[in-house]
Amino acid sequence: MCPISQETKKTLLIVVNKIDQVKPNEEFLTSIREASVEIIFVSSVDPALRDLQINALKQALIRLCPKGFFNGPALLGTFCHPAVWW
Image 1 (cartoon, rainbow, N blue to C red):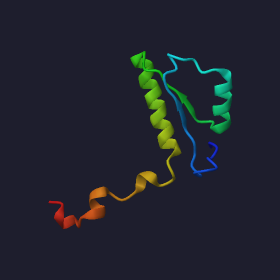
Image 2: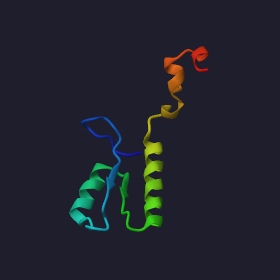
Image 3: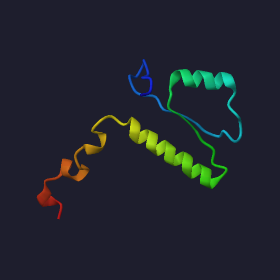
Image 4: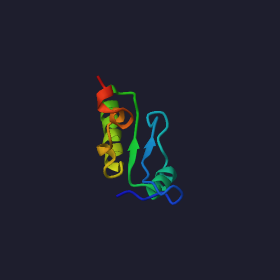
């Protein structure tokens, strides 16, 4: 499990973009590793690699969602009686 932000009480996911343009230095890497164990490095130069990185981001977001997040009520059913749907 990831560390929780002391300010927001939320799990942290850090995404570092443009790694093809500037390679993160060791001091930066150390500081973000102290903040979170969920770190994704992204570069969009190679489309195949970009797709893998975006999929990793999606999986991390899904993994970090609160329990029951995807079991919420249907949006339409929240606002309208079923007889109004058709």
